[in-house]
Length: 331
Image 1 (tube, one colour):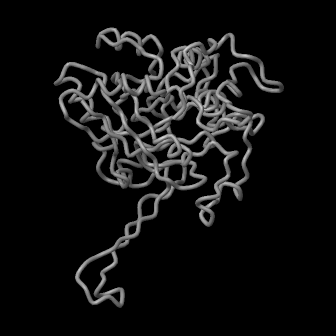
Image 2: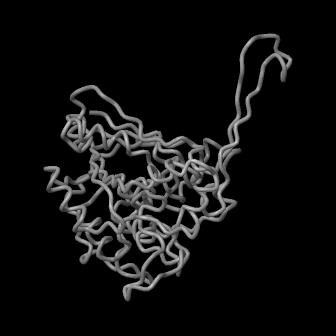
């Protein structure tokens, strides 16, 4: 973990221009020693920020923020759900011992997840954070775990800095969550935003899907991908960058509202997601989605405080595009 000082980052409106790209690119701001950065806003979790976050762990209570991987019977966007194979040593192998192994396969975006910075690129240019444009072949690195492609800002690089450890805090639920909503909730909760915080927004989406218990009811609720989320606008992107969060996460399926909305109020296509392009592609800001925030919400209300130590460490898969977050909130 480096000791660079990032407290004087430019405001959104003052970000330096990047040739051929729209305004709002933070490319190059975190580069060091001639090497392109692949961590983005995770760099804001400096030793001082992490040490301050540890002060949030006072009572010794931890809460898992990881929804079951099979929580959605049929995941959205054509993704594959969990397949779990149990292997009996006695019945399936030559080992004459009592016991089991198991194998699991699933799309890394089918439940609680982090989006890597190559998950959703700037659609017009096809470029991801810091100008990366990896091919599918370059991202498949299963056979070379110790010779990973360092040009792609994928999640395995989190392990080079010890994962994510910082101060998280959590607002609430509504349909289209605006900047004003978040500020009002933070004020009610008595929170002050800090440099390097992780913003976690609870919308009630996972709770709603849990209530639709049958595959048919879940499919009906998911049909059309019309869901609650944070207002997907340049205004929101500006506000998030200017607060210099290290990451954002929520319980909604896309963090931002679906479908995307154009400035004139009409619906846009999935390729016009605003926050995904700004956060992942321009800022280098990872997005967490479908996190299980219900027990966290209850714990915050019971303890009457809405900030906590947050830890997260994705799967160490070279070239990983998404991963379960393995996230804990510690009070």
